[in-house]
Length: 455
Image 1 (tube, rainbow, N blue to C red):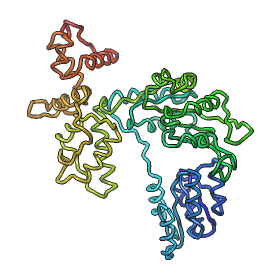
Image 2: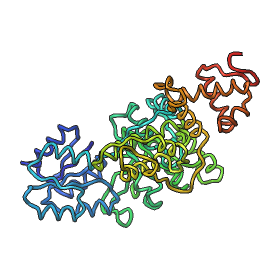
Image 3: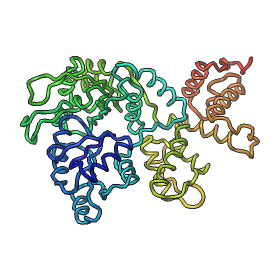
Image 4: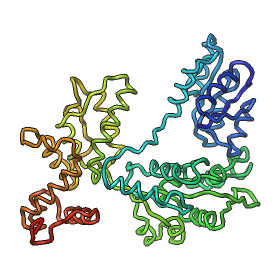
């Protein structure tokens, strides 16, 4: 974590700085607000600002807002000065740290203000396969296109690639191309000189320069205007950028990752995306499957979010009941992991009793048909855990293993008839064929059409 401290390092603020460094933070220093802003504009970057409450906090926060720089600001000052603390919070500070500093309080504030989990939670083979590919290509310098529906975890995958790359000690800088107005995105990416346009009150380094030596993520790049795509193509090809209003090109060394929830090949055919830029960015494609096609991840993520929001809300941990789990497996998850996270947050707040039951699960949108993969996983899970059915011997095996045996046994029962087996299993023939292809690649004997297993 990068911490910028604005104010005198004498006395208690210096002590706070030393505590932060002891907790693993990289600390920079500026003596006043203008010096702090200059450090931020210069591309040194910071994940959080800690400012002496005696300085003009409102000036700092207003300047950050004007220049579209987003980062949390924490004020600190003598603990008895309650009036200053109130003014700081009203000015927009996220937290107030009383001085002299308490090490545990400093650590808690750093964790709370900058909390952002980049942990990838998964159990499903499809997600495991995507991560194996990501780990394989991460050490290269190749540009990577990460595709997937909204909410599947594309930015988390990008951060995973950065951590596994040779640039892991460099910065990871993300730009949401869909969230920044078209007329401001160029400045955001390439920076600008003072007076280049209305509101350009000072020279500012762009995200390309900020990410120099590290990784730059262009999130939802399909939303970028075609005219700006041409300038981006030049930056990718020439490894140099031009600040808005500047005359001298600036050399940059960044590894580019991009994400999209659209079919870019289709966007290219429609003329909405440049084909030359597409081929430059799409050296490798990492496709993240939607949550409905990762049924084993649904339960794993649900449990993860239950633990997270039980702790956040100071509530006792409640396990997910079997009926509630079946509800989750049968849902369509149009919002993917993001929708599941919201669902489990609500469930933690609404649950009563010893576990989280169906009454605490409020699913959004119209009732969705279960995906074939989720239906199959639910069937396999039911077979695995229905002790009354005499399946206690299956305890300890994974759902994936039971699912595989269920498919092979059903196929044996139908003498290799794929269509009949798919009907019994309640899945499409396409899903069945995909599963059989996967098993064959894994070396599992699959009965040929018209023959039982072992024939």
